[in-house]
Image 1 (cartoon, rainbow, N blue to C red):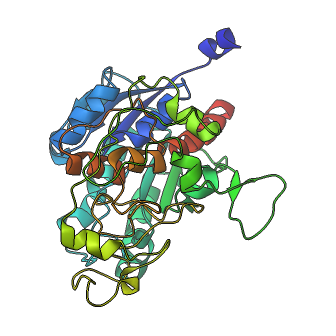
Image 2 (image 1 turned 60 degrees about the vertical axis):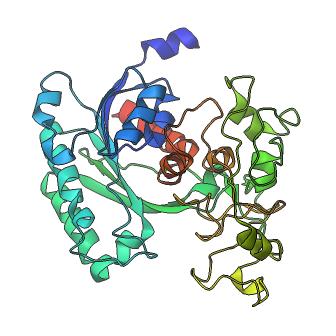
Length: 369
């Protein structure tokens, strides 16, 4: 089996707006892709990326300064992946079309035009579809179509593919050939229905019941039990013996007095008015559920005043390791910088497990081609 795999063609990948490398990791795990170049303007992201993918050339230059023709003059690029910054499109943001981040897709298009890959993957938040009453996504599609690509667009929920998190993202796949690209089949379903061919959604308990339940302002480097399921086995495969990133923030007394009133699944309105924070949105200061998937992990999952991120069983926000588990980053994967920077690297990523499922669909398409 191994010798047969080694004879199969390997494909060259460029990862743009790569962040910490969620897409790169998912593709890398198939052993059939070489990510030869990656780019992100955030230098800490690039340092974290380099820790995990030392053989990939990584640039922290502005994408507008990247010479893509120079890259393609050295190697044929088969695939381009990436998603321009999503804050301009997010339904939780101001969603301004004149936001400079909203036009970074034109730099992604320049890369497609210069590199001429057989296939590209453009990923972004679901809010992209309604930005400017649909004008923005139509403009993006027209640019790609002008280069002779056939497009497939789907909204994928990471939970449908074994990630313990409800996370919906838009994926636009562009292919040169007329042959149809098939998105990966769903492998999981929610608990409300039954499907004998699928597993139920993974929960927080499934994702991290082997991690120490440390209180606020604490840390631990020891797992509390052996892996309890296949997901935990996968997360701990090739991991160092000492647990990393299981360190909790030091919430102030006033904040602790507020979140201790949160029931499982509770929101800010559950807190008595006397202790309820006056700032924040309706889903701020929200507690997660132990036996449900996480809601969407954001860059601020270590801050209770952000979207729902309070641990279901402990009065504190999630640790960096817990957030990484909910995003399907294995325990060996390294992050770089302060806790806030590491959480940003995790929250902005494509879950590697979802990326891996997409990578396998890409292989099916390219191998048949």
